[in-house]
Amino acid sequence: MSTETMTNVPVHISMIMDGNGRWAKERGKERVYGHFEGVESVRACVEASLEYGVKYLSVFAFSEENWNRPEEEVVTLMGLMVKAMAAEMEALNKNGVRFMVLGNRDRLSDEINTEIDACMQMTADNEALTLIVFLSYSGKWDILQAAKKMALEMIRHPEKREELENMGVDGFDRFLVTAGIPDPDLIVRTSGESRISNYMLWQSAYSEFLFVDTLWPDFRKDEFRKALESYAKRDRRYGKVK
Ligand code: IPE
Ligand code: IPE
Ligand code: MG
Image 1 (spheres, helix red, strand yellow):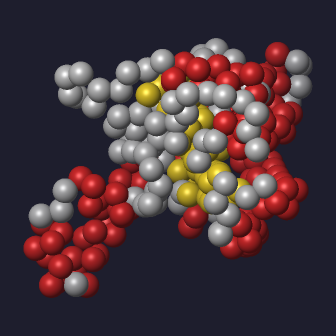
Image 2 (cartoon, rainbow, N blue to C red; image 1 turned 180 degrees about the vertical axis):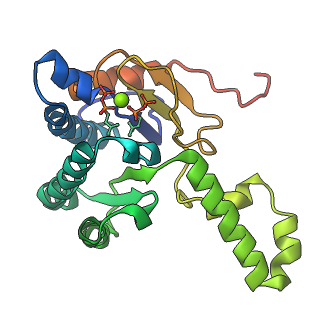
């Protein structure tokens, strides 16, 4: 149980984990070394989320655009995902963490999809924290697949036409891969880049953003706490007058 006190803790905090390659390069090592070290940062953020009572922690691990990286790096990264899932799942399960992977899973190998399914099934009923790994994900892809799903529903169920035509923005949420998950309250991007790189475009409409210079492998509990402190001071107005 938590020994830390923090006010105004975000329900959903999300990380654009960037800077692994540069972290490794600074040490004269291969980029993959940074990815390995980055897994430790995810573990630290999971532990901190449990301590502070964050209910949803999501991490952007691999974008649709990242498929365009050299094959060797893609293969290594996917191998690392499988290994990390296999190694961490027991501890995650013991700590009450529900594990999810969201993204274009059609592009993932059978090996990784099998591991993902096993981990998701094993942890499906856990309630302390939901850890979401965005894999082969992009915001535009998500909106497009949602629009296609909606169009298909209209074709298959003509009786729903009126309901779908009258649907508001909240109704569209159920077609996105994040259906049922609250929108991110805070999105943190590491490594000094001030862009969203096609992450949760729809879901981040009213998210708070924090851009930090720290490279992802250096983003540990202390940085996590600072992010929560920054968020706690924000005044979210949602277009209203306060
Ligand atoms: C983030 O680190 C991990 C992924 C995008 C997969 P990078 O690999 O982008 O590292 P930099 O940005 O090149 O330093
Ligand atoms: C964003 O990092 C994607 C992930 C963290 C998975 P990138 O390193 O791919 O982003 P760009 O290319 O610098 O925008
Ligand atoms: Mg990068």
